[in-house]
Amino acid sequence: VEVAKNLILAGPKQVTLFDQTIVTIEDVGRNFYCSADQIEKTTRAEACLTQLKELNPSCTVNISNDDSIDFM
Image (cartoon, rainbow, N blue to C red; front, top):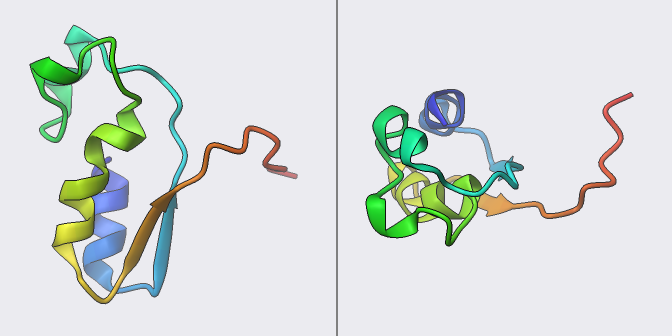
């Protein structure tokens, strides 16, 4: 999420998040965008989406749930 935050603040047109891991108690301690009420209920990407979108209104931030992404 730190990389996504810095990238969004740099001003690209679009950033797509891909993290299908469900939020754990450890994530709440490590990721300032995750909260205790999200534990075992949402993915890390979903937990961070709203706050990341607020960082730069000129940057479209969305989530990909497509696990068929080809990383070459």
